[in-house]
Length: 252
Ligand SMILES: Cc1ncc(COP(=O)(O)O)c(C=O)c1O
Image 1 (cartoon, helix red, strand yellow):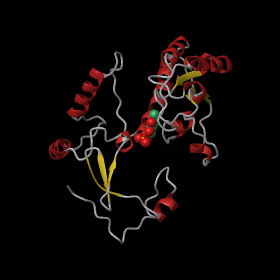
Image 2 (cartoon, rainbow, N blue to C red):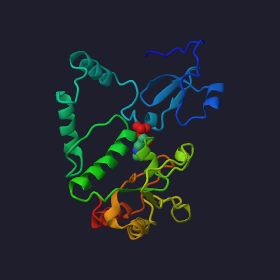
Image 3 (cartoon, protein in one colour):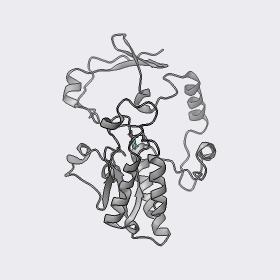
Image 4 (cartoon, protein in one colour):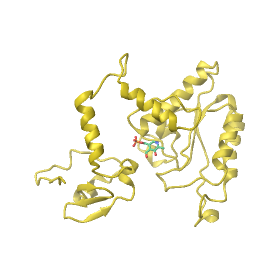
């Protein structure tokens, strides 16, 4: 296993770390030196269980040689082909395979490079969909309190973490609003399985429909299980009820 040696001359100031108290981190850096399977190893040789799989992005485990070999094979055969007017066969094959395992009807795949880009792209697709359907007035984007949809203007607008936009003059796209979150420790603390209470919170969509009019709403975007303000499973029947209400009001 290759262990990454951190040179003494390393300047920490040049890398501006996201969502991190930079001054504190750089005063006492916590660096990993290697990773294998479920564990990181620190510079001083301690093993640390990677309980969140990187940041939910190394779910197959660290240092998998079969993955490294597959990446090497691809990089040395056809590493890249533009997706504008040209094609890479593997992009199509990947789309085919995703469509096979996705729920029925989700069979058109648009690739992005990050969750932030995905959130903003999904919102744009909703706007374009309504416009193409002759409903160009549907421009309002509804998110949820405590939600996180990334760092783009769309994502921070429909996201419900106020600190993520406070520094940008509370930047929010015009015409965004939020339904209530479902985190309810008074009723749902220590739930086994999905929480019992809170399906009725989906009816908040009706409140916003009454306030703004369904014909102005382009999309309701929420995380089925929010991850950034605590991992919050949805109350039983909440997602189903939300889906029904969105369908009733013509919102994808
Ligand atoms: C629902 C959701 N949207 C967007 C993002 C942002 O993803 P990224 O950090 O890849 O931009 C996250 C990241 O946790 C997320 O959970």
